[in-house]
Image (cartoon, rainbow, N blue to C red; front, side, top):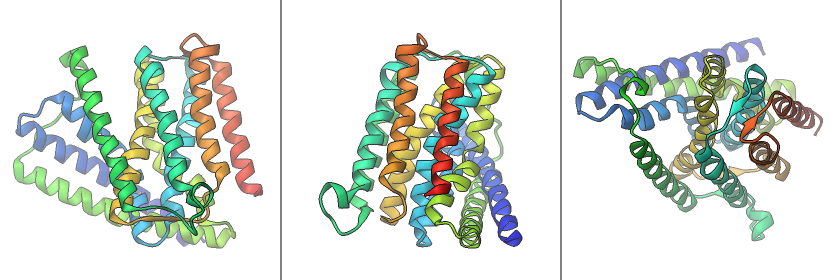
Length: 320
């Protein structure tokens, strides 16, 4: 049991180290190729922060642990809204940008519904097994490309100042390439260690891999979003705090699930209708709080409600 915990922690450390190497190396190469800081921030850096979820879901699916792969995405999306935004709102009430309320959050609601339907084949069309196949993965990736194009269009129209652009350190070309290769290696190995450790812990505790994916794995891979949102809120950058979470949820549903399904179709057995309902409820609550109750703000009381919902969901997971 303790060896499995050490394996999981070692894998998580390797994932984060690999994500940093990959992001720094890829950003340096992009800067050398005269890609603008705006585009680098929206693509390379954004993908780097979601690299832990990507590494774990991909290695889990390839290793035949599909419930961990999907549970990681579903659990991360639930954790991002209920736990991260709940905690962040307790630190400082969150003012939500108009475009986030009118566009991004409704997009997350729609995507959550679509992905839930794709995962419920036995309920929707009477299939013998629930699966996200390659064709559905390509559809998700296509929507991801459209969303990235929209994001870049909006960002360019708002003409961000240079002081808001991400700070990018430039390395030599060969060092940058080496950093990318080492980053990918650490991500792959770390993802394998983390997934195997999580599966061993599930067996030792007598719980399903789906529950471990929805809880422990989701918590571990969401640490970057938690740290970023809390720091942003304390510095008064509340737009960044909520934008980070909403963007991460879209990225998880479209890019991570899409890429994973294209490489290895995801067969689902342990993730239930209640888990998809919890994921949908989380984003609907977020929308209601920003529209109906908080005048485009998430107040401390609403943050507490989100946290209590997260606790209730995890109690349900333990008892089911």
